Length: 230
Image (cartoon, rainbow, N blue to C red; front, side, top):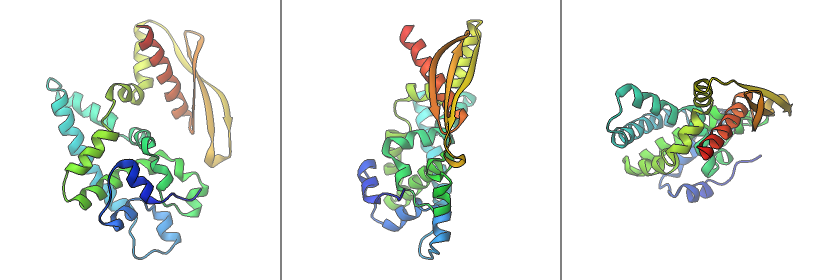
């Protein structure tokens, strides 16, 4: 699938780049740059390095203010869950970032557009590009607050779903297991369907491009059921 125009991405995130080159670089995967033999555009890796630092600083300040009684270790663990690879890829779905990434034909055919590692890297690169383009922290901070640090209760529940569910089930002296119901698609575009079985009873079903993602989604649905009942 070809990537969409970056103009649409700017509309979705609510930021218009003055330097279009920075945005192009943030959306360019190494495979695209190599296959197209582009000499006038870098890939996203350097911007990712910068964006990672900006994201860490903004999220750290946010958690420091949001949780005044939290210890250093607690804030470190929370920050790690909020800005990890899976978390950023999940947040990037809100504005369809994967549709705008410029991939080489080989990476595209290999399912690169759906890889959490690539999507999360590009998300950080976008933050880095925004920081340079705006000349400061304010614009990337607004982006991070809007798309990454919003709706924390549900996002924390999602990011830590399997471990939180395991902890809850153990407290109830129960059992939890995940059963693979379906595996389909070619090697580079697998689709998994997994059920979460609590105390021998199938409670929910989750889907994903990996077993881990499907299990996470199934666990999240169980936790939402538990929260709604309690």
